[in-house]
Image 1 (cartoon, rainbow over the protein chains, first blue to last red):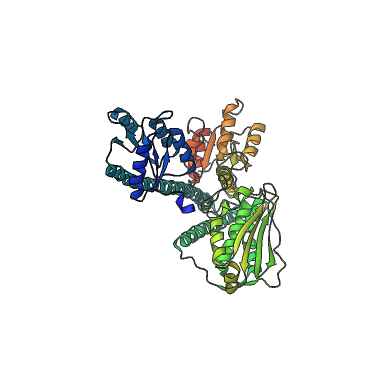
Image 2 (spheres, each protein chain N blue to C red; image 1 turned 90 degrees about the vertical axis):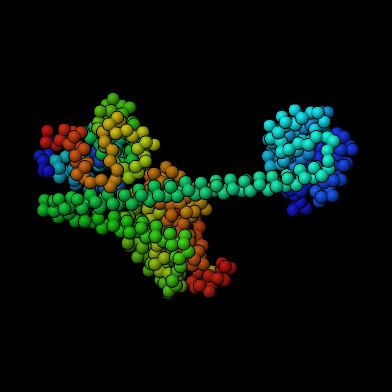
Length: 385
Length: 131
């Protein structure tokens, strides 16, 4: 039985003396413990390999493998099990040594059976504490991992913010100092630097704000009739200066759907498009191509942002949508990014009853697919949520 | 401060074209000649082919990062003497990436910094565009 596997009330009694085994088993069983017996240290080890125990009572002096060896083995391999040492009269030194090696308690023969059962109950408490400590340790590790990711996030975001700020600050400093001396072309270009970087800053700030709203649960879509094709064209057009600057071709939006109208939040979907296109730009080298396609799929539309960039290895296909996740530090170092763009995409798409997935392999470009149901009712039907 | 063009050649290296444009405009206006590179590998090639008087270089870049470029320059006696000014948006990289101001790099500036500060550093390092 499955539930029986980790019964903390299961006890192993190890003794080469049949009478001790018998009385111990009777006393512990009467208190509701499940008792298994072993007559040698070797047999005890076999039992330990087959079954999980809450506690062990082992004789110290046995032919072959003695109680001390059993204790050492348990401490190494089954650290959550309490080991109690049963010693013959006058051999307290051995018991004390076992306590040093990690035994829970000891009892000397001849013993009072009430004392034996009391020890077994104390082990139940130890076991519960041990489990609790293990659980807390796991929690702490998870929090430490998240905390590390958050620190990296803060560092990445501050870098993201500093870069456009520096371009704008520098351009402005030059303009203020020297408008009359600069030729019109240079002045115009410096103004363009400021305008483009301002929009980049705005989009970083919007992503951070949306991210915190998603975390707080206050970022709910406001559904309107939305033309997905028009949105895709607008997003691609808005990013045109960035495409030009990076030497990347933006393929025209290609659509094979009868109607691109869906019930959705246009602002949120614009953010989805900007984030997916922005990501594609980051990972596509000069001379590459990026495009958007719309295709019919059941009761909705699949929007695909594809690129001819570096691609993503299969082991990262799910992880890239985790908040703060970056495929690896060196790529982040090369391309920047805060690690929240795709997490925001996933949240928005799921709030629309859709889903997002990637098809890609290294060197072969990527296809980021977003399925969006045409209406909210159909969303409920298609996702079963 | 306006000065005569003395012909000191500065290589500007950053993967952000806007930053390269702004720095190029500023340095030209202050009497320097400029060259551009948009990644570390390109920078290394340009420096080896035709050593500039100083390099102004970002850290986080594709192909090869700025600190690796700097270390390669320092290994080669032909290029070890070229002053390198590191400009970066990630402050903590300094210790991690073996960048030591006054030891293996001439100066270290964290973005965003005023352009006037970069000009000041160049003036000190190169003895001023006017000299």
